[in-house]
Length: 128
Image 1: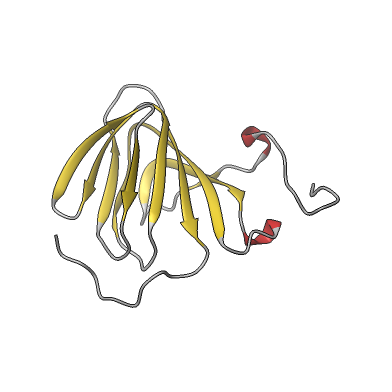
Image 2: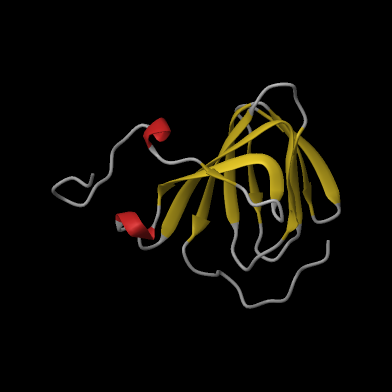
């Protein structure tokens, strides 16, 4: 429930967890912690949870991502390069660069993902 100035304060587990569609991945959920529905006109904050053996399939889109790993280990491909990123690490994914996530551990992977509410480029998909 919004506060008197339009703020939103809450616990992540009070926000509905939505299963990622099979076309986008498996054993993965998303929680829209803050979005345009809350009055956030510029950025949205999402919490992803990917169970052991789960992944988000390769995709790209015309907006950037800022990601912070809360727990677990992820093997992530950005363009043609693979990274192993762990709890406490962060990463930036430029717009229109293909990327995918694989839970590389035996525990649930949890990360915050901040995105702009509107595309940040009109450039074509970047190959790198």
